[in-house]
Image (cartoon, helix red, strand yellow):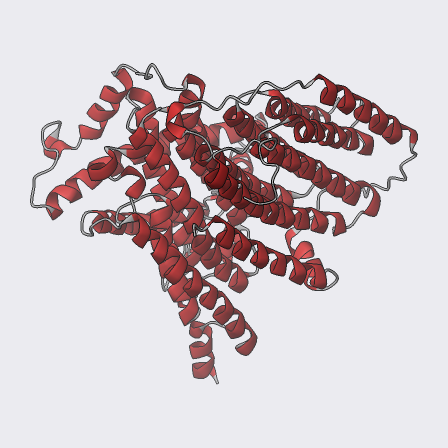
Length: 102
Length: 368
Length: 164
């Protein structure tokens, strides 16, 4: 079976679904962050695959680059928040962190 | 412009038996040749030379028992490490403990793929050469942090965390100073970067900013490879041996080997980017015949790299170690701003002088 | 099956299997580590799609940056000397069922839609220069916005993480 566009799309949707499962099933907030990273990777595959098979230019790859930027910014801020919560509450379990005030 | 396997294939085209072999066979030969004929012996000899230099600097004798002047010491060391019992601590995380040296070895060895030893003598002529090298060496951090954690030892853990913080921070000035070279050459391809330079046009003399960023690259890369004066992850007086405290035998040998392999990569990259790669100063090698040119180019490249490597050893045995906070301060308050300034300065230079370097400008004065 | 196809399946396996470990492994450190395989597999997929620059960026940013940060956070947010990284047991059956339903829907969608693919005949083009040109012409505004975003994230993270 030759690899076509829909192979890449199915691969990225598997990755996306795994990320979603990670996001809704983990209690550890860093675990949730990992799920988000998987989702972002799935997005990147989609963009690059569309850029090769449909658009035939590099605009999809540009968007993959922007996804990297956003992933980096997101992970930095999220981990800073996680560490702050850990310093205040000694846990990073999201079910323990319900109050708006730390 | 071809890579080493294709070059070998072309070279042996007319030979009776070797000519019919496919390119991937030559790739395997080239990879194993590089690993076993260059990397392993080189690391061994580098260890011997380093110990001898350390002895000279500290007014000791250094290794002098095995062979004349102790020159076979590295073989004895390698044999000892190979035959030694491989201990995995009881409470260590066994899988990760085994994985960590493998990861470090893979990323260290993969970096050799894009080192241009001579014209056409480069394992993989990648379009994104130097960027690939940055990416693949950034995997080392992961190995260090893993090795430190999996040993289940406070010193190892501290060493691993320190290594990760240090390598991630110092990657920024390294990448920025490489970027200044990319601004000048307009390509990421390692072989192409060397081609852009010549017997007279080394990148380091292109403009004053590039000279500064060459210095920044060299110093920051020292820190990235955890060499003294930036060896806080393995500071022996504080952390015993840092992340590799619990390792013994073959696995320790891999850590040791890759340290020297990485040092050589740093020097080779500095040579390629700033010191004109395989170009001999004031003498154009490209007019020579193939049989004479390739060995000469390799010799020129190795001489430059080894001179840089010897400087590294000299620095190691001369300067005292930095403190953790001083190290971070040096990175974020000195190297990062300066390398940004160099990047912007080089960009302005490229606009003002239409991409001409100082040697070209001086030459232009004489001609007119 | 050409070598391209078999490489695709290899990289797909390298992407998916560690991702499954990431999602279901009870030990959060192992979950973080298996992300490494996943990121690497995605980089391989990018290479297959002819995006070499994106692949190298993927390795540099995800493996060299984000993964190290995540490992750091995992180690700093637990009792690091005790080697206890066990996530609390939580029922994962319902989320998994939901995920399988979602996956079925997506696959159905992907296979029904007629994709108007136009694959150019020439091999992979050098991407780096083209990407640079696009970034500084057509996508200049998003590029500048991304740099502002990164700066904001940098300052925000420093302020958040600094102890009072």
